[in-house]
Image (cartoon, rainbow, N blue to C red):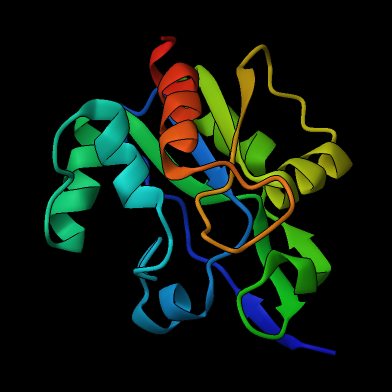
Length: 165
């Protein structure tokens, strides 16, 4: 049985229009206290590729960049048992109150589910989105897998999901 890991609160403000949901922060992110802190994760590279500009060198700059693009970050899981960072090792998940979040953040019009673990946990929740659109995007992890798209393919899908083209 893995150690119980607890995620972060949402990063959102009144300007947020799109909520990007991951599964649960990995070890490096939890250690540092920042979303997508592992240099091996492609999240920031993908976001920069989607918007065609740098997100910033510091975490504060990156969060300001996301806010400027009306993007919010959170995870579908509040906590879970897990050894290491792999979503495949998640056991006994405890979900965040996404319905409550969406009610409190009526400016959100789109939820993006990043990766298969997030999508699987979302389906279990049966979230009443109140009409908010739900879109799927590939994982930003570099973890090898049978059907892992290239970075360029990921950017293209994320661009379509976030910008519609």
